[in-house]
Structure formats: structure tokens, C-alpha cells
Image (tube, rainbow, N blue to C red):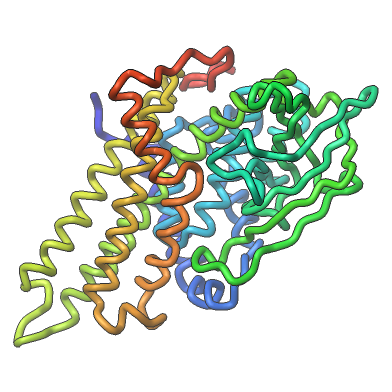
Length: 397
């Protein structure tokens, strides 16, 4: 097992870190305070080739491996969770799902412009009454000739007002429960589609999050992703990719919390010495460092399984569960280290703590992942091979 990054991966990390330091860090406090999502960042990510970093070159992507995507997400979340979320949704949940399940025609029409960053993709699964219980969705898709008529509402949709293309999950046969869910590629410009941002979020305030509404939206049958009834499998495979990027991003939040705390530990003195000399502060610093290193190992193990084209639901679940818990604890400890200053916007750690909570909830709550890991260990849950998998890396052109 090789733990060394390639020269290409090292250059990628340096490039993204420099971008974050120059184009996100100086402005993110203001954007977060005002609830502003800066669209220029998406354009710059596209210019740098980061919107499709792990998509094969034949489909307009960077052709790098899946751990390259992890590096991008880690470094972006070091700047702010909002822009890591944008890449997670666009690349992990949408583009990688098209790569895995799409027809060649769908890949040419939708994946290529997304990988190039010319179009933005999003993901529509969650509804007001359906989160962890996916089978509780109410969105419907009724076949009429060569089209499907979609009706319903999705909520907590990242990039709701920004994305051009949405992967939407709807029932084509509710009597079959989750076996009756299908997946569709929906365009913003289709008649009957609308969106509305959610205001007043606790965290990730610089992100665009909201609802999408489908009022008799006519979707051509060519936009059915996979076969009818495969929607649940497609959604779960998409979550394997999304959770991977969330886990990688959590490493970036731990890193940001640690960097801010180390700096403050050398600046602040109490009882005649730097606060970093106090053992209980050192304990918090040590826990951050341990959490960062353990989380990275879990993330890159899942990434390597992806590179080999192997199913990684169990490993990705573990990485997402643990890294998000570590990130939440690291941000909480960072506020504690900063004392009263940590409770203000004078330092970034309050934003880290607010941002750290959402990833513990979305793409599988920590409770869902706890149950999953227990069921794997007990033998109650066994993953079956999917009939379609992500292409292994290096990609064949």
C-alpha cells in the first residue's frame, strides 16, 4: 500500500490551496454573514479544471483518479463548506452518477458540459416528508407517450437556484415501493420547473440551498436515467460518491480548525505562558491531529476502492460517519480554545462550528451510518454487486 501522493496530486493540492487562499479566504466572512453565494467561484473552479477532475478526458474531465477529487474537496472545505458542497453535488452526486448510469447520448449531452464546467448539475432526492426514509418520497412520474410528467417538491437541494441540470427521483410505480422509484435528468428550462432558496440557515450560509418545484414538467423518455425502477439503486450509488466527497471535505474542516487553533495557541498567553503550553489545550490539539489523520486514511481507502472499480458502500459510510464526527468535535474544540473570541465572528472558528453540523445530518445521518456499520459487522447487511459500476482508474479512452 502506497501512501505517497503523485507529483500530479501534489500539484493539484497546491493549486487548490492557492486558489482558496486568494479567492475564498479574504471574502468568505462577508459572504457568510450576508448569506451570499458567489457564482464567480464556480466559474473559476471550471477555469482550473476542477468541476470534472475525476471524469475521463473523453467526457471533458481532467482524467485524474477519485482521490484527486478527495484532495479538491478537502482543500475547498478548508476555505468554506459552501464551495466544497458545490463540487460534491455537481461532481459527486450528479456527474459521477451520469458517468456510471448514463447512456452514451446522455453523457455527451449532459456530462460533457458539466465536466467542463459549462453547465452545473444538482441532485433532487430529499423531500419535506422524506429524508432517511427514501421510499417515503411523493414525487411522481407518469408516462404519457414519449414523455414523463413529473409532479412534486424537493427540499434542501444544494445549488437549487444555480444548477442547469437536476437528477430527480420520482415514483413511476408507487405500489412497488422503493423498487418503483426511477431517476430523471431534468433541465431548469423545462416548463413547470421553479426553485426557491431557503434563508436563515444555521450554517453553510454562503451556500445556495433551497427547494425545487415540479408542476407537470414534461421530461422526454430519453432523460430517464437507467431503467424504470432502478432509481433507488441509482440514488444509493450516487450517495456512495457524495458521501465520499463529504468525508473528504470534513478533513478540510478539521484542518482549518487545527490551523486556526495552532495560530491562536502561539498568540494567546494566560498565566504567564502560551495557552498551547496548557495540557488540556494540548489534549484538544492532539485530538484534532488524530482525527485528521484517521479521517484521511478512511477517505483515501474508500478512494482507492473506487479507483479499482470495487463497491465501497461500507467503507465510504464509515469514512463519512467518522470524519464528520471528528470535524464537528474539532470545530467545537477550536471555539473552546479561542474562548470568548471563538464565540464571535472576529475569528473563523465560529463559522467552522456552524458549518460542521450539517454534514453530520445530510447524506445519511450519523444514526443511519451507525446502524449501517453495526449491520455490516453483524452480517445483517451484505452488499450485492451493482450491474453498473464506476469505471476504474486509469480510464480507458
